[in-house]
Amino acid sequence: MSDFLWGVYPYLCAVLFFLVPFIRMVYRPFSWSTRASGLFGRTMLGVASLFLHWGLFLLFVGHLVALVAGLMGKEGGVTLFYWMGLVGGVLTLIGSTMALVRRFMNPEVKAMSQHDDYLVHFFLIAIVGLALYQVLMLKIFGVSYTAATWFASIWQFSPQPELMGSASLISKLHIFFALTFFAYFPFTKLVHLWTYPINFFVRAHQSMRTQRYRFQRRWDLDWRSDKTWLLFGALGFLGIFVACGFLLGHAAFAGESDTGSDDSATTSVDNIEGLDGYPLYVSQCARCHGLGGEGDGMGADSPTFSTIPRDLTAARYHFVSTQSGVASDADLHRTIRRGLAGTGMPGSDLSSEQIGSLVGVLRTLQEKPSNPGPAFSVGKEPTSTEASISRGKILYKNNCATCHGADGSGGEAIKDWRGLAITPANLKAGNLKAGSNSRQIYMRIVAGIPGAEGDNYLMPSFRWLPEDDRWALIHYLKGKVVPGDVTRR
Image 1 (cartoon, rainbow, N blue to C red):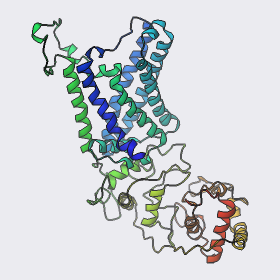
Image 2 (image 1 turned 180 degrees about the horizontal axis):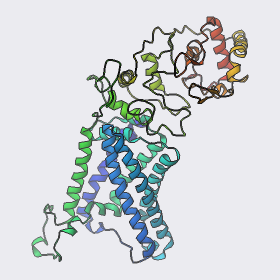
Image 3 (image 1 turned 120 degrees about the vertical axis):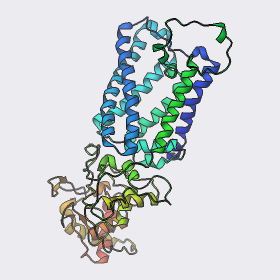
Image 4 (image 1 turned 45 degrees about the vertical axis):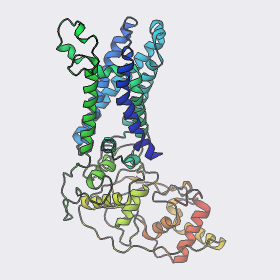
């Protein structure tokens, strides 16, 4: 479904958006009208029209700015889009709502209204409302980095639907409704946008029809008719979109690294299909972790996160498999692939090669080189028995209940080195960030959870437990504490 929504559906919408206006202009030219209703309810119409048109103009220009800025990794342009989108969105929402109320409340306007007069406003209110809710309430911002690269891949005619995998649900709904609206657009009276009378400012004071043009059958290209503006307007839009397609993959890292490979973040690997390297990092990670990896992205303060985004420059990761407590490439690869449950960090649909290129970027962003060292090995899991579960219950009580609670529902919050509260995992809810399968529980037991600074650990390593006791504890957790429907994750 994801491949269809973000790899096929955009082309269907684009075909309708660009092709139907020409068909309509040729076969139904007299339907090309605004169906103006300005004779009725003019008091409300004036304010609604002013707000709606200026709001849409700000949104249009703002989205173009965000498209280029997102592709190039320019935070200033994305910030400009924030304010243009915020002001334009509020104006559009107010104007569209007022126009819709007018159509319902004014008898004359209601009598002359058609179905598209209502649907257009329903679409606008839904699209803009979702965007404003996401920005103002959920504080999810910086999705421009993700959406811009996906959109550019569409116009490279090499769609990469996997790039949309990390977008929030609200963002996906916003974009899906926008695509659907553009597909519906040419069937409504809004087609008059294509033939906005720009030539009004330069035309003669009196325009007369002559016999010379009465039976003209060719497509007019001398800027006299609506056909001219439709043609060049459509070509202009296509030109802008295709040009943005050529910007894909051109985001450049502006910082420097102490790892001895200053340019590795910007280097692409020839044998990888799709976006890779630092441009891929900008697309998938920058909105939360920041363009430089300091954890200060534009969406870092979202209340949808249970913790602040990781400072990638410190290279201190919690969920590792090594004896040193330093994340290996395999650890980073798995975290990117699976995400962290309950934190707000989504999983990824990227290819293994693309994720590998992201791991390379993370290594470049870190301030100091690291040596993960050997990893813990996980042997074959023995069969769970009543005896092993009973033994695991005793081990849990003696070693785990202090933090996670006697029943596994989580204990009191503790403070990390920055004074931020950290709540032990609610094991009964299966809320294990790195996964609830046997291997991941085993790794947390033997590797613990390193802290964000120095040698401190949020959860100590229990590597001193004998192998049989480790599995006994896992059998107890899986059999009596962690819900069965999540232990396969």
